[in-house]
Image (cartoon, rainbow, N blue to C red; front, top):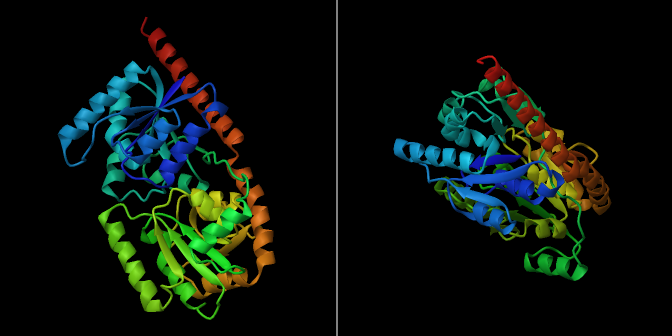
Length: 384
């Protein structure tokens, strides 16, 4: 049974990482064969092809250009027929807004995969809400609680993405080499944040908390994440200026885009991302826990479904002093870091074990397509 995943493909972040995880773990769901349809041929398309995944290019879309939307929809219809697609999953509101009408016309079951919590106010969400899906897959209970702002009613399933956690530790020599290169004290703490460059991720609060720990001589902070769009580049520039103003620019390393975040996690000691607003889930938290890092984040949104007192520290929203205390405690207590990090690996496996999540994914789709097939047969029979 072929399932078509539709996404824009022009950026790279958590959603794209999750799609790669689906492709990588495909063998665990043998009854479901994924095909990926993208509008833009960028890093995601290249990485999917490197995994041997089937990638179909649609056409570049500009929402303000109706002709580009029509061309992409026609191409999608061709792909659905040529690849004998059983069901179509639109990832994110943008893809659903653009392509859901074409999926409806094809007669295939339509799935909306919610990666972000909805507020129903953005023009893309209002456009997406015009076409209700047969099923919504949500990455957290928090995300699922917001679906009524788009579609009422809507069947939904909560499904965490499969994430292969754990893995081998870095050889001591490689770990030391990374830490030396990035200025980590030999016996100190390297604090990592790896995220898109956007205010939601709480970089500013992170910097302000670190500025109160200047007297600690045994920490360094690595901020990994590329600035892909103009507003992200402007935001990164503001953060670099803020670090200088706070007097910590020598200890905060802005690393830009990195393809080796997994290695950075295994060379770091603490993962910190103090979200400034509720985030839908937080795949990077699962990855950090799986790498054995204690996680420090804000107590709101999907993060509360991942991190608890056994594996990290949740701080109140907009509370820089509390964030600073949490970081100080972990910087000063290697044993506490080890305790939380050890529990984190089990927590990550419980949430995102690839075998369990892919089996759940397969059952959801088989149930959807089986039900849709029976409905079509009954409808045909009623017209004989």
